[in-house]
Image 1: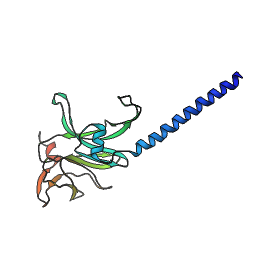
Image 2: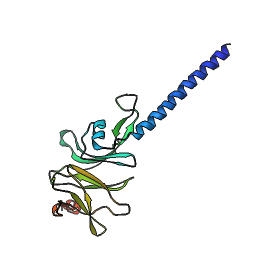
Image 3: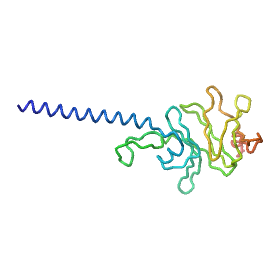
Image 4: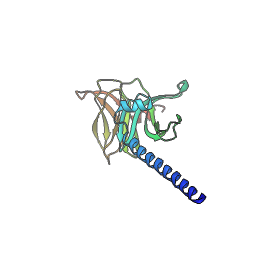
Length: 192
């Protein structure tokens, strides 16, 4: 009789654990389907204002301003978010967190800024737009100017597969007039 009760008890424990595992897997699938589609939804999730936001293959990417204590670094950064199942809040559901693998450029009061990075999503350009008249960033790619739509306060653009990252950037208004331009090669030669 003792053996039967012990086996029954183990079977009940296994059944409960399997049920909890199944509920957990269903919850995981539900949470993963709920990747915030809009900037406003993700800003509410992560409690940070973004300059730009895009979901690439189910992974949220954001451009945001980052300030470090004592002004050690004030920048515009690009990072991706991930679901953290062991979040500091010790909640029983995952929370969206920064991946910590960001790319940053200096924050500026100029009309616009531009940075580029190569990641799993391909080549990407990002930055801030401080002049509301700017409607496109043009990148000098493969020997020609290629335009990508942007808007204040910021942008992120995945470049077409196979194209090179831009060497120069210029920002244009609705009439095609260049409002601001950036040549990273000029920045490299400033100290010469």
